[in-house]
Image (cartoon, rainbow, N blue to C red; front, side, top):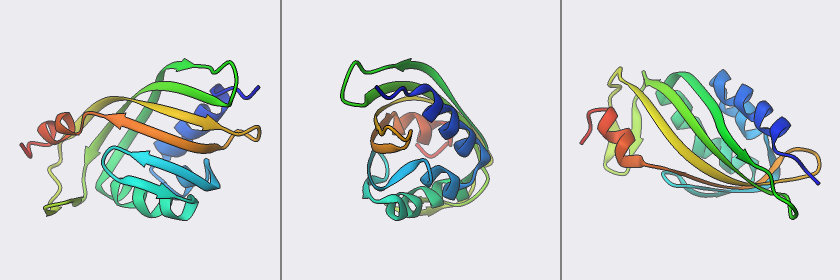
Length: 140
């Protein structure tokens, strides 16, 4: 049985580095990521392309796993997380690019993760309150 703890420790270190390539390397080459803001990405390269603008828009990133629920079978796990980051670069939105606000956001969300035996993420479904993020940025 695969455990999520070591995978999430590796993921946290990658996320907190602010390096989208390190984050993408936490996924299998054919991974699927369903992201509440970024849509569905398939493959490590697509996940990198989707995540890169977010890492360009935010710095001082701190991602922490609050609760981890280990699966009994099937490699699926759940994690409740908190991320704190400062908007220091332009943010791409469906309405166009928004200049950096300089504001810090704190988001709590959850991810459902399928983790392989070699401790990579094969599939992720990531959920968080996008309105809370936009409100904290002063965009609503």
